[in-house]
Each structure stands twice: as structure tokens, then as C-alpha cells.
Length: 425
Image (cartoon, rainbow, N blue to C red; front, side, top):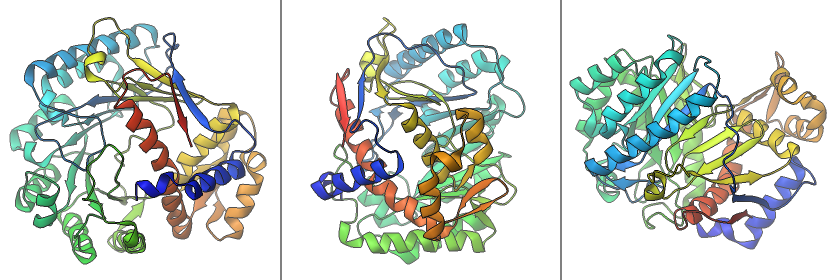
């Protein structure tokens, strides 16, 4: 599947989709080296990447390193230094969200406590404070500590509840331990307990995936995030089901959606489903955010930047961390904003006008006509709303389009600390 993304037909399809939606703007897209530190942008959303894990799962594409206490402490200090610089030049506005991802953030609790202490003046009762968790770290003491720190949203990496699949992918945790972790978190008083489910692994049974989702829902989780296992150039091959099973994975995505809806959940993105009335756990769909840590992204309304993926370079005391920035025009950033709103299944037209001082219906008239003609979208209450059929196609386009660019970009950044240029085809 990974190799198919980079074939000539796949590149041609990406070019065609780009030209159709974005228009006659610069192609291909390029990230270029940041020669000077960029001006800091004010945003109410912060993300902290903590890349240390006890064991390294072969299928995980994210930047990670095996945990060593001394290195982790040094890394925490580097993040605090970067955070201090950001706080010094940005307005003292309340934060809407801050998230700790990884990696296994629970391994760096002291650093997290210090980060939250520094941010305390900007945190209020409405701030979403989230953390990713590994099942083996969840204990009653950890739940108590997280609540004391002010964490109110958690995302548990369940991934699979099938022992043979867990073993094949090197997960050093069994189904019983995972379910015990889920119960502790559900009882912990968090605003949202999200659980990640992965499907599409070699040897995985579709019926068992649906049963896993039922089990989690009956345990009382607030959100199910179910997505296929993706293979990348920098991850281990042989764990992801081959392209011949694409149709089966596609059908399973629809079955999972129908199951969640039948159990009182509502879709909040292409592959996230929330118990009605409960808030979502979300990071990538935020309009803007500032990333801290090696490999972290920062997205503004008209900017997209990445830190160096080299953990040792990030920890150097010279303060050089931002590595690359996207070179793109206004039309691209309008399209980028629209893409993520479509990913969330709702596009607020007034918000588009507020940001870009133009009309969404006029700027993307042909796309609007096409989406309605194909029966993928309807307009209601000042929004474009994707229906399940439209969600299916966004899901498919993401696998053709965004994942191919992630594969190219992350692959090069994990090999080069300071790439001069990265071309996305």
C-alpha cells in the first residue's frame, strides 16, 4: 500500500485533485528550511510532543525514542525553555486547549506538571487539557495525579483487543490489562475518555473489531477513534494488511460508523464518534495550534511549520528548533482550512468569511456544486454538512492524498535534521 502511493498514477490523481479544488497555484507544494526564526503567532491551542516510550511499536509512525530518564529530563527542560520564549512574546489570553502526545507522556509527569504550572495563569475551567496514555501506565494513582494536575481529557491507545494481533505488533499488554485501564479512566471523572481502535492489521478479523467497539462502548467510553493501520516508508512492513484487502477495510469503516451511531454516538470527524452530549478529544482538527517539542507542527491560518525531527538537535541549548515551513499562497491556505472542516464533516460558511474576508460559496463554487451533485453534502443552518457517503470519500481521498505527503515528509525529516527542501508530489 505504501509503494502504491508513490506510483505515477497516484501522483497524477493527486495533481488532478489539487488543480480541481485549489486551482492554478504553485505545484508541487514545498517545505523549505527556516532561515530565520519565524514571528510567533498567538493561538489558544498548544500541543506538546513527548517522544519517549518504554518499548517501540513497529507500526507506530510517530517520532519516538526508547525512554531513558536522563534524556527525558533534558528534553523536558528544552520544552520549558521553548515555552518560556513563547510566553514572553504572546498576549496573556486564555487557552482553549492544550494536549500532551507522544510517545508515552505519562513517563514525563514531572515535566508535564512544570509545563502546566507555567501555563496556569492562562488556564481556566473551560480549557481542554488532554493527554495520550498507554494502557500499561494507567493505575489508580495515575488517575488521581492527572485529575490533580487538571487533566480533563484522556486518549487511551487501545488499538486492538485481539491477543494474536497485539503480539504480532509487539504490544506488551494483554486485553485484560487494556480493559482494566479503560474502566479506571471511565470511573476517573474525566470530561472525555477517548479510545483508539486500529483495524486493517494482517490477520485481523473484521467481526472482532466490531465486537471490540461494542465492548468499549458498553464500558462507558465517551469517544471511539477508529482508523485503519497505515504503513509508511519509515515503519516496519508486514504488519499492515495488503492493498487487496482495501475493500474490506473500507466496508469495515462504514460498519464501525453504523455501529457507533446505533449505540448513541455521533460522528465528529471522518473516523471519530462521540457519545451524544460529551465533548470531543481532538488535536489535529483545531484551526490553529502551536507545537512544542521535536517533530511538532505549528499551524496558523496562513502558515504551517515543523520543528526538527532530530531529538538531540532539539535538546541543544542554542534555541534552534524550527526546521521547515510550507511555501504556499492564500488560495492554498483557504483550501487547507476547508479540508480540515470537511474532515470534521461540517463547514461553517460564516467562519470562512470571518477569516478570509470572502465567500466560501463563491471561492469554491465548483466544489460546492460537485459535492451536492454527487449526493455527498447538504447545506443546512449556514453550514456545508457531509453525509456518510461524503465522509467515505473524504476518508478515501485522505489515504491517497494526505498520507502520501506525510510519508514523504516524515520519511525525509526522520533522516535529516535540517532538510533544505522537501517536495510533495
